[in-house]
Image (cartoon, rainbow, N blue to C red; front, side, top):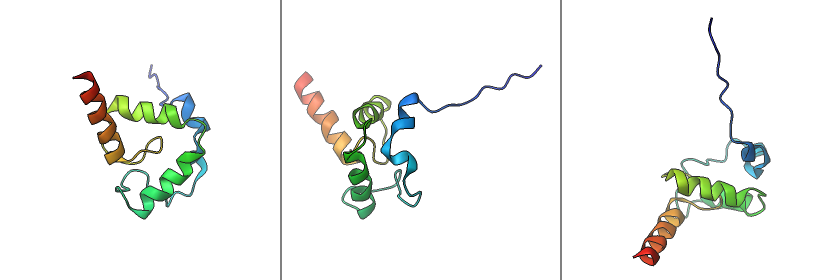
Length: 87
């Protein structure tokens, strides 16, 4: 007997503002300061799950893309600030 396991996105993603956006917006490869990153951040501003998304990215140590309104450089700066406080 074969058992199929359904892969599902976390429940919070159902409520994400980016869920129904134009697929041409490049969430994963948008670089800091690029038009794509600015477009993504604009969508994130009104997202009801922005904080959860940002926490997910920080917890997973995401290296690419815009998550919760933060690009790679934003997340790096936040991690650096956190490390400075902890030291």
